Length: 223
Ligand code: C5P
Image 1 (tube, rainbow, N blue to C red):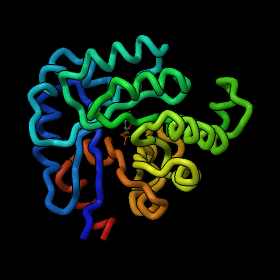
Image 2: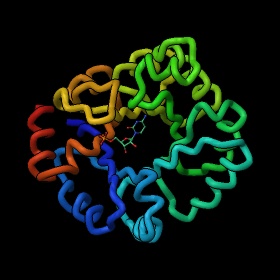
Image 3: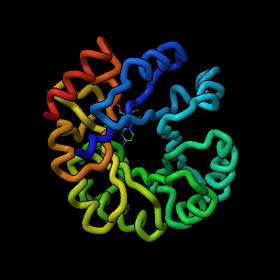
């Protein structure tokens, strides 16, 4: 049987904590990858730690959001880390996405849509006049045009994204219950897979508290 795929968000500044997360989330029941976000990537020892990782699926969640030249240079600057996946905000625009795709090589380039921590009210405050679903649909079209390898979106928008984007779909905003922390557009792991997510990104619901118990709860939930 195909294994469910999960990226564990290693959100910490502490290499020992990240080591603990990796050690305690080894599982024969799930296909696990490790996502390193802005906190770990910007920590003192984060880069060096990542450079030494072997035989793991790695995801550099840099969420690049800049002009084409800077995105390209930044991707070149981290090429030695040989990430399997790397993120760029689709809001950089088509030109930056295409330029980034040209230099990303074997690393799969993931386009990030509207953050899962935003709702329609926050989107209006920023200045968008369309609702999130419509914006994400447009962003998915851009990702398709730029030939990106994957999309990050909320599990709620997977079906919309799938209409125009046929490659991998990765969804953060995963919660088992109503304790959503700062996330606004959430679904449970089961619901996210049912909607068609290829990979889930899960951080705090696994990494806070007893990691092994949390992972087992996830496995039971998915049975
Ligand atoms: O702890 P939690 O499960 O909310 O972690 C989600 C992870 O996914 C965080 O590392 C966050 O930076 C990342 N992420 C997200 N929403 C996006 C893109 C990435 O929550 N749209």
